[in-house]
Image: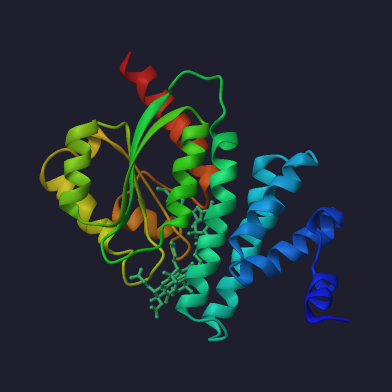
Length: 236
Ligand code: B1M
């Protein structure tokens, strides 16, 4: 038998796998940074009636958690994790329009960014996608965002909500730098400030002076909708 036949025989046909097997395979493919396979797996699960949220949480986010554990333990290194992140973004791009599908009128606006010194953007992107799905207009200023970047975006877009994301224990204190500057400039109460990211917790959210710490993107969307609605009602 030729080599190419052997390779062919070893190929896994994703569409032939059960849901459970496919999700397991997607964990492996995410781990190996295989973007096309992740895109294919995402499409297959959607075609089997999975909701975008279910694919996101049970296949993509769960897969990235495994990557994170091996990254922490020194089994995976930055280049491999970058490839995994790239593969995950391939799946997220397919889910984005589905998560953003909504019949609701725009309920508010948000400026969001990952704070200075931090280049992690997957969680931030997810929060933006979920907010869009909840009917928000989202202005994403990207990664490594300084006080000046946040202020320029607030000035330009006059959002209801300012969102900050941080994934590193070394960068999360920068949220306080931004909020303290808002206090100094007398504009803190003009905005609802939400913060999030894996190393944060509620206590830290209170410490930096945010309105709320949000554990995940679904909570961020729900909190943003509730707080903007409440603020509009109380000022009406
Ligand atoms: Co980095 N990294 N990384 N990394 N990386 C972590 C965060 C780490 C926990 C890994 C580990 O050791 N286990 C660790 C931080 C340790 C610490 O600070 N205590 C770490 C480290 C150390 C580093 C470097 C320093 C490594 C190095 O260079 N030696 C370096 C730092 C670079 C920098 O930022 N200056 C680095 C680099 C990278 C990559 C570039 C390779 C890549 C990022 C690619 C990218 O984002 N485009 C990367 C990745 C992918 C990770 C892990 C593996 C996954 C992060 C992720 O995307 N998770 C991560 C391990 C982990 O978190 N398990 C890790 C999936 C995402 C959906 O979750 O972002 O938490 P998350 O978002 C969640 C919630 O937190 C929440 O909603 C989302 C869920 O719905 N949320 C919000 C997030 N933001 C929110 C904002 C809100 C509300 C909710 O309101 C506004």
